[in-house]
Image 1 (cartoon, rainbow, N blue to C red):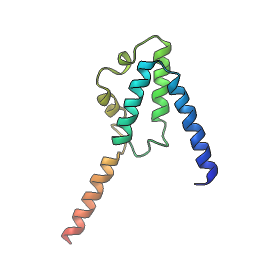
Image 2: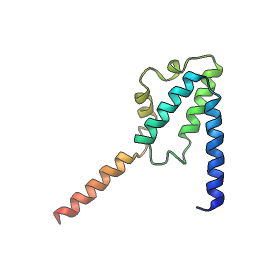
Image 3: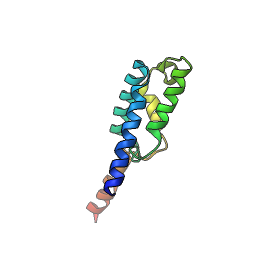
Length: 108
């Protein structure tokens, strides 16, 4: 990864954050909680993937339609996030795989 890639990544991230800040306050709060949750348990490709921008797209559409954020996602934010990443490889999956590989070596 070159310096140009880093600079472009920062520009994209700042533009993404500007979109989040333009959302209504309740949407911003829920987005930030989702982001925290996803960074803890989320998919391996989260930083480079389309999940977070997709959530902002979804929230922008909901806000434009005049819906509250909980009308869109329900009251269990973690369950909504889990449903979004259910078919993605997570860091927990990688950890479990590494434990499986290490336990096989210990028996040898």
